[in-house]
Image 1 (cartoon, one colour):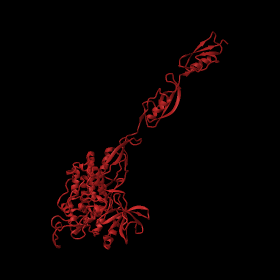
Image 2: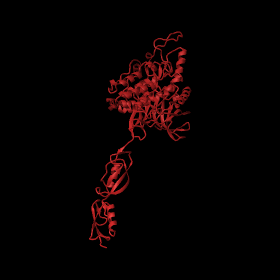
Image 3: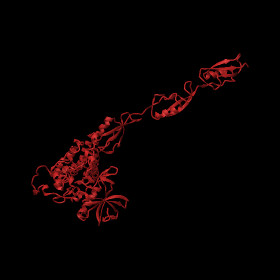
Image 4: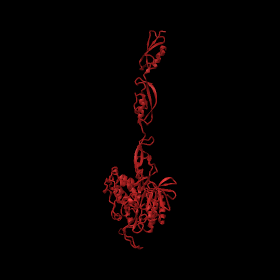
Length: 578
């Protein structure tokens, strides 16, 4: 942004303050600005004055901006508002911090297969949503593929070329005879021939985009736009594996189909192309997906022919979105219109959705079919998204089959469950009924049955050590009681309940019986012979009487009272004469 920019600091439409120039293109300039009403950062695309002064263009631009604003999709740069004042016709859009795919390709060269598909799939999802909404982009190229700071891929400039083409219903990119609007490196042959076009021009450009990501170079280059146009018309796009051997035949076939010179041989729209890409990805081994092509380690020249940057003055003309002069020799001969002149050769696509010239009744039938099939507004069709089916309680084979029937695939893991039988599905992520992309795996959790841990043998171990051993086994020390033991030292564990070796649920309590040591000899002094004898026998000892005529009271004992002694041992008591 320089101070001589007439829009610097201007408040457009009394709401949007222009703050910084982001990029300059052949048709517009993009600024970063602030929505002063909602206090948020926005991107402001301002049409060049030569276009903004055209009343017809302005009216078409407003209508098209409204159509694009209805295209709510996570991979589309959202249009927030459109306005005009004496200084500018502009569009307020979502501000996307980050860079674009052109910058990535300029810095890295070619991408790995996985990285290329990670970019292409959201691009096709965005284009597919547009195609199902009746919109065609017509300027798909790396500069219009934005990559946010957190890795989100978004497609910018939806509908702009269609507006500039000056046709609300015919969907062609021609401005007048001998001219066309677009970026020459990504033009489909029918655009160059100025034939009626449809959504398959986006499919063609997406195929060029995939080739460029896989190889680091464009398939058709030249010093002048006419040379590039000639190659689009007369040369097939080469297989990317010729430049990047790791690509393999699956992606060669996808590039060949998407860039077929005859639009009838291409996938019908981006939805169909996306389905093919997702099938190919699932068939590729990990080592092929992650193999780095040789070109990826060699950054491309900073300003090579056909490459674009944010500042238009430094960008070669071949890659600007602009009105291009088509050499007369590249245009098909114009034949006078004759009402009874029968069509020759293969029927050309119709102006909007690619149908050939048919009797009126067939057109009506096909239109009805399209209305039935396309009744999902601008959401992606079942070729792109699917609803997660209910597989709860099924085994692995049943769940895999149910997912496969809906075009999905599962990533299976196991988890213990107290309630679900072993081998049955506990849960899915995303949950049942959620709409997901078919390329994304559904996480399916299978039951391993109830989890059980073994009670360790802690007999003879001190109480503190036994409690730690139970904790290490993911059990807890429960209640404890004490008993005398002639074999287990005092304070150590005599036994556990449940017993050692049994299997219990994690966290279950284990009761402990702790030794009080050997029995204490009872105090029998002062008792009669009969009472002392009974007390010793009850305590597990064998009494032995000492004294000449033991008829009195106990006057002594050995071992002394409270002395620890083994049960069954002898305790001698002395009884007095009186």
